[in-house]
Image (cartoon, rainbow, N blue to C red):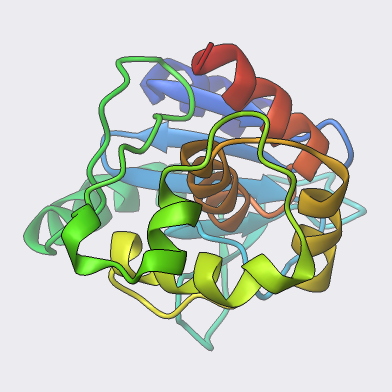
Length: 200
């Protein structure tokens, strides 16, 4: 594992480590590589590498986003494949607009137009940092997030409970949702702290 991580650190332009699990996310050009001792169904990584518990030889269980097959590869095979995956990902259209030049998570800017929202949705969209979130806000919030991200959004119970306990403006909710969807091993508290640091 040391050989693989050493090489990924050299190639990577970003590294995010979970403080609550053993998962690490390396970004190599357009490829998000996740290394962990476990697999999670909602990991938003392009290349998922599972380190066996008895990892004494240079072998890893490897799979890809939306793939049902698993492979047993060594470090060289993984590193050789990343450029091909990067080329493939370059061909896909990315709809997420980012504005921060940070070397870690990039802050997402809202792109939805206020005149496309209902009166109640506009209240959500323009909410300030002192906004107290309640259960009656959730449907409108999910609608605004859906319009911003151009995909269906259903907030988990854990996410809702976190909102009820914290005050924050809509753009921080947006970034919290994107962050925790992209890096599911990062806790809501960790993600919220980083987002607050970047959006003061």
